[in-house]
Length: 83
Image (cartoon, rainbow, N blue to C red):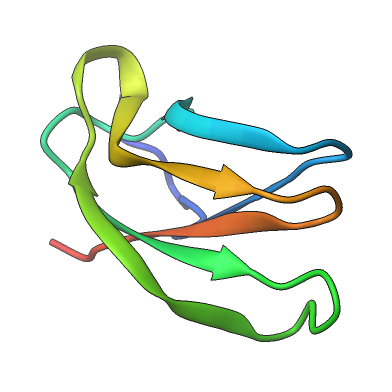
């Protein structure tokens, strides 16, 4: 089944410090390229500098290398690259 609409941006926000080495994207096929941006808690409408480009693996899992440190209240935004 092909979705009628797919949001090209996913936002992850955390209430505690974390080291992110892997995350899951629902309904994104393996092989899709994504770009990870730092999400700034003090400027929620602005993303920070590009951190890394990754490829979605089987089951929607994305491995981040090197792991991404996220501070309490912060997070990251993942943009799915168009075909």
